[in-house]
Structures are given as structure tokens and as C-alpha cells.
Length: 355
Ligand SMILES: *Cc1c(COP(=O)(O)O)cnc(C)c1O
Image (cartoon, rainbow, N blue to C red; front, top):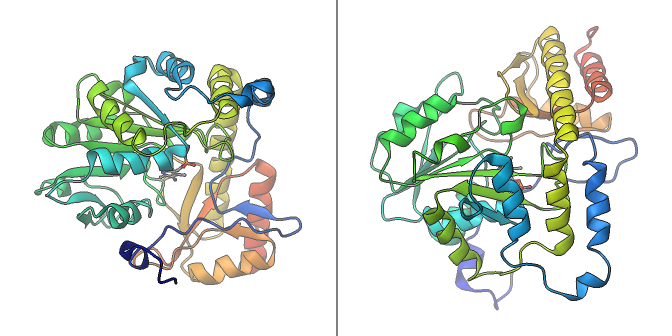
């Protein structure tokens, strides 16, 4: 608290990131990072941009990276926007596209950063409850709205809508912007990028933090109609013209170009997830169907908070949200097969069962 704060600061409810503590032998399954490193080509490309060239500002338009992403996703560079992590891209989308007289709609259980940006930017919003199966029901969004945002797959449930379901939502809401946050799409959901040609109200946001193992680099991007991208660019250039340094732009390009490495890691996570879901089910957990690199699960016999603390005693971190409807659940990041087995062994001990 300081008397020098602007009036808005005391009323903010900032996002609380998952913790990054230093504990020996720690198994970190709490922030959905990749258990694998990035493509080795990333470090090489970054090293080449970490010498004398650092004297010079980076390309403010990040044209080489946008061209690489455009080619990869089969769109034009003027349909691509890049930023310092998808959190920054989303933050700019809230400013540029989601602030209207009518409320912004998003699921009651979703990415907990959305209400935080609304608070910062003075955006009015309404949450729409997930159904009993913890799914987004698109019919429930038929109400007066200024815009819609949802994560697909949703976080922290991991449940995905199909592209056809999102297309129906877009068609019903053709007059308002719809942002689809695809942070986890590479782990088994369908991307909506092919829909941007037909729906100029659609902005798809993706990140290199999860499936490309680059959480530490901070690169995210959005794909949509050139008009939407121009709006984002106006906000960006009113805030920070150089959100991505030279090493970040070079590293991100190298990652996109190493398709074989990307596919190998992505498929390894999906395989380890299958093993984790099967193991948790054997231990009596109810596991929601996940299309992400985490699972959302609850045990009928033990509260989420209890299990989270018991795992922490064994140096395993998982995420627990002390919130209505989801306090019983744990969100557990999928690691390597070895890490999954360590988690299952620890849970079996805690629950007093054989895994
Ligand atoms: C992790 C995450 C993000 C943000 O990722 P960045 O590291 O900022 O790119 C955005 N949306 C959801 C749903 C996420 O889980």
C-alpha cells in the first residue's frame, strides 16, 4: 500500500501464477510446462542473435516470425499478431476487441486471468456456468453480449469443443468479436484457425509456452482477420513497440521450423496423458476427458486441498483452486512417463492402495 498509487491500483485483483519454488527433487506438475526442452535449434538461433546485434532494436513488426507463422498456419502475415507470451496478446485483445457497452461473456470456470484483465481495463463481464459435466454449452451464450472469450480446450477442465461447435457459436454471434484461446490445442483438440477465412469476428490465440516448451521465452500469437490484427497492433504500438527481443524472435522461428521435434514431443505428452488417466482411474479418481497437457481429476474419498498438501510433502506440486464447484479437483500437468509413474506411486501411498 502506498499513498502514491493511482486510484485504480488498490481495487485490482491480480492473477496469481502457479508457484516456482526451489525444493530438491521437485516434480513440478503445477504450471503445465513441457517436461521436454525446446528444439535444440532454438538455442542455436538465439545464440546467433545474442552478440553484436543486441545493440540494435529488434524488428518492431517481427515480420520474419509473422511470415514463418503465416506459412505454418496457411494464412497471410497481415493475419498474424505476435506478443510477449499469449498473456500479452490476450491483454491487448481485451483492450482492442473485448471492451463494449454490453458485457463480455466467458465461462464461470475458465482461465482465471480473464476477470483480472476486465478489472484492469474496466470491462463489464458476465460468466456463463459450465454444465453439470463441466462442459461449455454454446446455447447458453445466446444472450445480449458485447463479445465472447473462451479457452479451447478449456482450462482448468481440459475439455475441448469441436471446430464445428465453435463454428456454430461464431455464426450465431457474427456481429460481435469471439476470441478462442488455444493455449492447449496441440494436445488433441481441433484448431479454429481454418475458420478465420469465413468468420471475420474470430481471433484465435496460441502460445509457444506449452506445446513448444518455450514458457521461459515468452512468445504468443494471434491469428484472425487483418482488421482485427490491425486493432491489436494499434494497441501494442500504444503500449510497447518492441515486445519481442531479437533472441526471442529468432528462437520462435527456429521452433516453428523444427516440425519433427514438435510432433515427437506433442505425441509423447499425449501418450503419457493416457497412462496418467488410466492410473488415476485405477486409484478411484474421476478424471475429466482431457485434450490438454494436464488432467482435472477428483477423488471421492479425499478433498483436493488435502491431496495437494500430501503430494507437496513428497515434493510433487500440483495445482488446486479453492473455488466454488472445483475445490475438490486437482489440476495435474502431464510429465514424462517416469514422472507420471512417480505421481501415481505417491498417490497410491497417500491413498493407501497399490497402484
Ligand atoms: C498458459 C496459458 C496462457 C498464457 O500463456 P503464455 O505463457 O502467456 O503464452 C493463456 N491462456 C491459457 C488458457 C493458458 O493456460
